[in-house]
Amino acid sequence: MWIREKEDPLQTSYCVCGMKDSRGKGQELGTNRFIGPSHSPFRMPEGPELHLASHFVNETCKGLVFGGCVEKSSVSRNPEVPFESSAYRISALARGKELRLTLSPLPGSQPPQKPLSLVFRFGMSGSFQLVPAEELPRHAHLRFYTAPPGPRLALCFVDIRRFGHWDPGGEWQPGRGPCVLLEYERFRENVLRNLSDKAFDRPICEALLDQRFFNGIGNYLRAEILYRLKIPPFEKARTVLEALQQCRLSPELTLSQKIKAKLQNPDLLELCHLVPKEVVQLGGKGYGPEHGEEDFAAFRAWLRCYGMPGMSSLRDRHGRTIWFQGDPGPLAPKGRRSRKKKSQETPMGAEDRKEEENPVRTIFSIQDLPLSSKFVSRTQRARKHPPKSIAQQSEEASLQQNRETPTAPEKGKRRGRRASTGRRRPPKSKPDTQPKEAGESSAS
Image 1: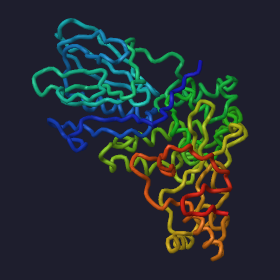
Image 2: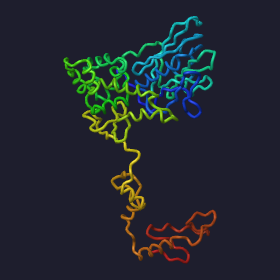
Image 3: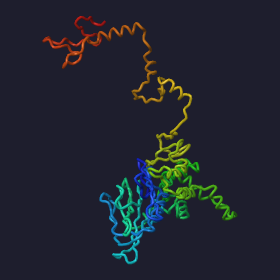
Image 4: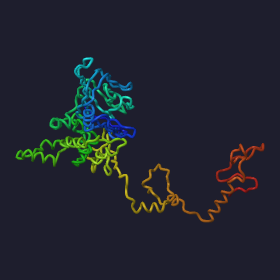
């Protein structure tokens, strides 16, 4: 069973977010509660973003009491949530690319109700926001309202593209492996024990997205992990991972020496744990707000490979784009050329300055133009049609003057047709001759 997240062709992102004011900035409501700003569409959520979301829910909801029914939008195809309580609390726990939201009724709440757990998968654009009840986001598909007294707020699951899903059963999705962040030892053992699985016949970049073994790893994480180890993305996964079975530290080393050795030279499975952990430790929201670029700056500065200038990219067999540097590896898709991202700003060189000084200069060479292009620069036209002599120019001017009619056509008459005189129209002339006009000789 292959468990893989879909890629958003528009690269829509997840956001760990809360409330924003009219300027898009985060604002503080009540006491000791900061409601973070929302995020721009950039990339879809991965393991670190789900963990940041769980932190957000736990921090913002720990002092809140919710009450009433759980409200679902009419357009969502997800199931109804059969829960109603006069007073309950909300907590969250993330595991890989899933988040479990637990609704716990308070003692004495009515009607009597057992705790209910919902497991969320964020899809391409899922997020949680805490907003005033009268200012619900447009795509808030599941809403939990606070109980009085105090301002009525709503914890909303917002999903613009509606690929997110929630399951009232409360169980983690069957088949997903241990979390790379919270269950590292089990995760490592699960991978090395199952290297005979056919998933490891595939390129390592594709195997890293298999949630049976790498629960929490997504597109930007796999690029960053492989880049740090200089592993070609289309190297066979089993070839890369089998070497880790024989890699054991000397038993003579002390515990501190073993830890130091692992931190200085981590292998691929260790980076699957350490790299997501770095993103979580960045703090903030991970993916940055729509109107607060400073909140995204830390994550953008952290990136080394994914979408960075100078890096190449290819699409794997699932259509996901993998970023890398150097050789793609022996299992790279045949017939596909890697694309290299250019820097947005390049210094103006001597050739660029010459182009500014001489705008008629050809910008593209003929090799750069596609065969079907109709664009021909002035210089190329000049080369194909060299300047004509004065005699040729005067002769062409004479012919052009003979072709033109002496007066403008009458109103309602088509250009080039003589006025009706009752006589039959003369036969069409041959292509190499011109019809005789009154008072003019034929051009020969």
